[in-house]
Length: 329
Image (tube, rainbow, N blue to C red; front, side, top):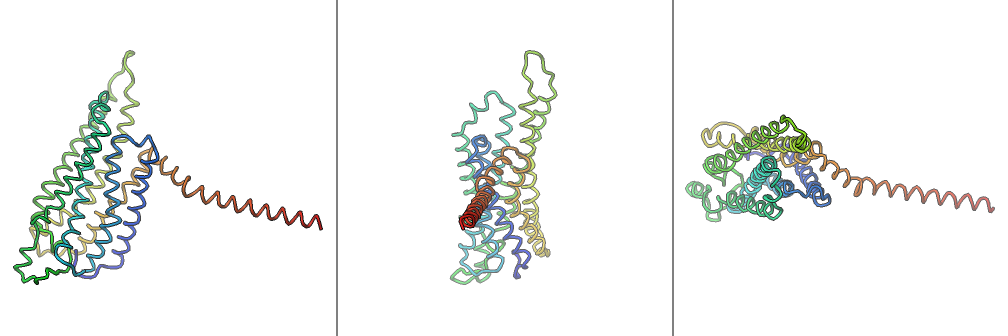
């Protein structure tokens, strides 16, 4: 993070992103919980992605604002905060990869998909994704960090530092291990998977249907629409996080280059990604849109309307009483 106090606009935007992210992704989890049609195996991974985004809004962004102020902390406290961001980012990437593989299997083996991809196996895949994310994200805690470099630069015995991401996290780790090892390869693999998915769907849709065959257009048409929506989620993730990783590469290979404003923008982009997925689901996936509207009407809108109706009926009753009294008089 930059050295100077962050501008007010940056803090305000971070707070807005945090609130939007928490509310939007809580709605996603809520929608899946209350709507049986959303309890497909694919939505196990979408819920996992939503939980990571909730943690970004509720935990990471407040910590990022605190770090940006330049808080003096113990080295390992600051390192743990930075590693939390890495764990949540990695879990999001692996959840997106799991979603892509799930949609590929749904299109590749539609007849045996439900036998192969069971809820138990999907749950196990979610747990594995989080375990891998924790291992990758916490690797700096095991020694691949900047402690030795800071100690050589006369760090005090109490290990107190001004907490900043680049101070504690090694750029060699971020570029060679994190980006080239665990971010870029999954993104390229997902790109290839979605390209294959779209190819297979269009191939099926262009098949001529004989009298003895069922029309595949309905099934594959729905799969195409959902695949486009999930590919959009992947695209937004890539354009939100790649700028920050590119800046990490620049920091490693050209450390003297001035890029403070760019870092602010890249951080906002990466955090903002946590707030956009519920918007994509609402506009692109009908089941989510219906569930969101149901939640709104059942718990927010209609509750207020019923209160207003009750108040209106109470007023009418009081007016009727007054009229009766006047008649009696």
